[in-house]
Image 1 (cartoon, rainbow, N blue to C red):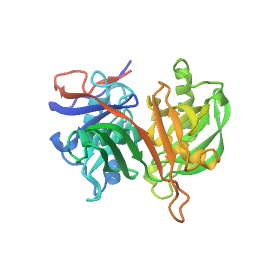
Image 2 (image 1 turned 60 degrees about the vertical axis):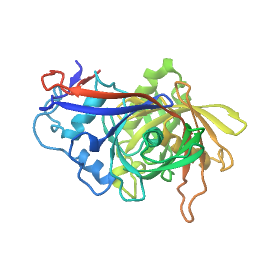
Image 3 (image 1 turned 180 degrees about the vertical axis):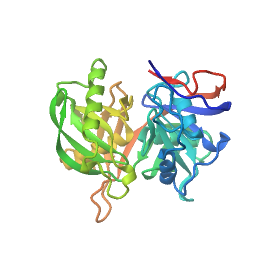
Length: 363
């Protein structure tokens, strides 16, 4: 039986602007235009912590056994937009909120089916396009506009490249990424494997798909997803998954199963799939996950600053990416990931309080 969310007591009307980045959806909601109250907190990271805290005791979601706290209005909005019939299990999006200070243009609280995430590279790329397309951030007809965005893991930048008045690409400049651990043994139903851990705004576990007897292909997606969920669960609480600077960023967010393709003239070429949250699959090559792959490849000596990674997704879309020089005295590496984002729709979603499906369901 599908899990059905409890119905909000009021009518909800919310406008969204939807993009896809290399095939992965991103649904943008300007919180200030929803009529909902601001999320308490002085920073984006504090606002995310507020949303993760139990709102109030009481009824859980239908089918949830009454153990989960009833969601607050912002989480009700998330569920409405991610659940069917208005969304789907692979939907991703963000609430646009004020930045931490005047140094950024906007802040964002990233959301997906299972909650609120610390980082989202493909979402940052989409937000860069949206900020310029909507006129929120001025941009030249020819040249590059910088869109500075505060996210729970820090301040990131979308470099929006323009030619003849059109956006031709966006470069996501992430928070510095670092290798956390190598060759961590993990037992799965397909055998024991060794994974590498890297922090890149979120913590990612990486391993070759071949170590599990798998290839990165759509017809192996069920097995890849199952393996990703097992690995993420097995690493819960592992010391290397903790972020020493901010405990709120700790825990494995995604598992990247990759395979090597022939190098391009510019550098290594890999195909991968990222399984994140509770079994969601990134259709893009994964923006912050690509940052994690970059620092691991650089640590292996396979990627230098004058080379780039061509990173292909399970659906065949591509990011290009590179490592930048570390800051003095810092072992973490800045990274840049370049891709494209395209508008897919503008929507007015409505919830009628008499709708017995509440904020929707997941299958």
